[in-house]
Image (cartoon, rainbow, N blue to C red):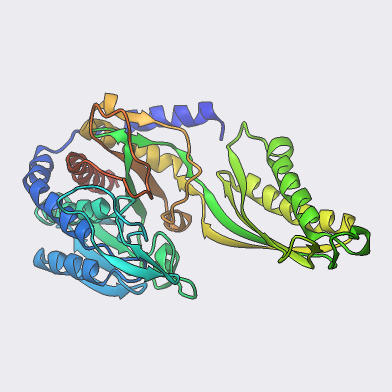
Length: 427
């Protein structure tokens, strides 16, 4: 679908599905704001790593049960799923929040700063909500309370999905959205559409950012194993140098992006993040290993790039007398916002946040495993402002200095609540 068609679709959607923000939903969201902030502070101060979100899950479970919501626990290890049936029949919409923190040592003076430490992959480290998942959980807990108080407005069923391990399961374990899907989270009752949000430290409070179609990248981890022939460093002709082959493969991979990928369609990235080979300055070793990541936003480009990386690594190694194999591990699919659903729900965002505060943005090469839900049902994923207005510097996600302004969460509760009511009523 070309850009003109997409813009036309969005325009038609805004006309056909225009909504007015429900004042009772807005008031209920404002009434629960202080609770949302308190929940966020508590979760932030007590972060838990992927597949270990036991205390977080217990807090969520207790709250949902207090609202009379049907609750299922231990979904995909530590996940929590709540089901709220509205007063009227209709379709099923899901809302998702991720729960896990990161192995990052927090570096700030917040009164609710994390002091939690752990051993992660053999190293001592702090644990921190350095990506805003604490805000996502608190926002969805608040949304659940708002909707539970307004069941008379709900034409259908709401499924609240609190997901573990968005940052990736520990080595040797399954986890995240893929495992939740495998265990049937989108079934019984079957989900018709799903919404999700991600707070952003560089977007001002009060702003919502979105993009139809490919929004965040498919993320693959790749490993290239190169086999040469060991020899003395003074006699390279006596062997096959895997380090030299590795350098040619790294260079060749970049030509796939610069010379073979149509970057007018979507951006793409190949990054080699680790090269391992050799033990001594005067020995040409027998083998080398490359480890890196591929980021793509278009399915056809993804297929082409992976195909060419395979051909290039094998072909270049053979050309220089060695051999190579390459393996790919998928971490996330393309976070793809369904075009019709985006068009339908855009007016809701504009009504709640104000049209001037809803921004169409470009895609990002970061990854998000919400994408796996979107492969199963139509989904819409957007970004919520978390930067204090007037700030000129925002600390990036996944860093020790990362911070989010509490004032950003109220808009998240308002928007998620209104999305549910508007989507189900339109059906």
